[in-house]
Image (cartoon, rainbow, N blue to C red; front, top):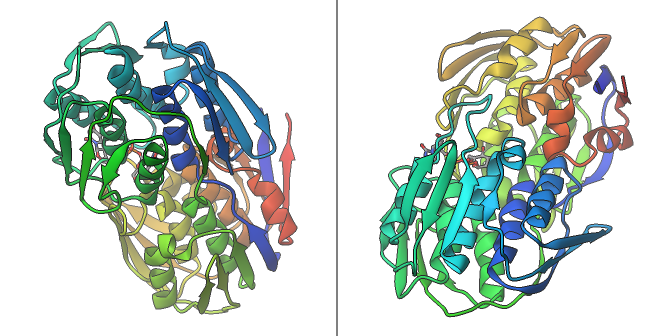
Length: 418
Ligand code: UD1
């Protein structure tokens, strides 16, 4: 089994470029199912989750081809409307094929994704929203069976703002008869990117990025070309890596406004951060203070950066209170960080971090989920000696060659293939 070994103590310096956003690439890839023909997507990151999505698209009859960061997807008229458990269990985002297949073909069967390390992650809101548009939905033998002769536009009010739910309903509503209004929609930049691609295909969507999105149903869509937005979570992870080691790191090819919440918390903590049109630079800092964060939907502090920010706080002067309001079980990294010597008290949704600069000692640790694995690699950068992060396959689901990027900044990181 592969692992990553980090030897701490190097100050990171230099420039590093951000890849395309995983959480944008996946829904956009699923949206191609809405239009037969050849779609061209640029800036698609090379990640396990993208591979799993392509695998699912191929099982449905599509052909995918990659050249560098460009992916072309040839979409036929589907004759198979099922997303099998074998693919869905590898990647929860597979549920995003439900909306487009149902909208275009009037039926879809998708395996239930099941739980995951960070919480139960139900899909009830996706299903209720599809029912509001007139879909008949049953759940039998671990599969969602959805059918509708023709979806009808209606007002969908999400009780909780859900990113995947908003994306699924957006893709379902493009062919619905009349107007769909999505209220309390997720405002994440990845929702906007999906809406932009759907509009390029001929959809009539307005308001993406705000909490009310309207979709005017159309008869058909056509394939198009699109460049996936930069990955704000990868950008944030690299920025925190530079900050942690006290170096000057410029993160390029990103959209600074997507990281406003992180940048303002880092500034509050004491870091000097400068931004240009498509880059963010963190400047050297030796002492920073503990600050509190609460994860909330965009534009709030991203839950996907909570674990990495916690590592930054283990090195701060003073105490930090970290509140996780999105997922109920997202402190799995705390136990592992404690193995390295971090002083953290976790409760269900709140963790208190008592910072102590230089207080971490390298040890073997276990990655539990995608962002947790990134946080352990970051901790390794400032721990004395070697930190071996096991179960690193989680990292490959969402980071394009994080070790190589960190190495290019001077980190001592290597992957072991055993
Ligand atoms: C997406 C991101 C994930 C990120 C999360 C929150 C992708 C592929 N994944 O996940 O990286 O951490 O947004 O920003 O884009 N909920 C329900 N019922 C539902 C759906 C959601 O109760 O039917 C709850 C969830 O349990 C959670 C909250 O709503 O507490 C938000 O989840 P959601 O925004 O749906 O997350 P994902 O789309 O799964």
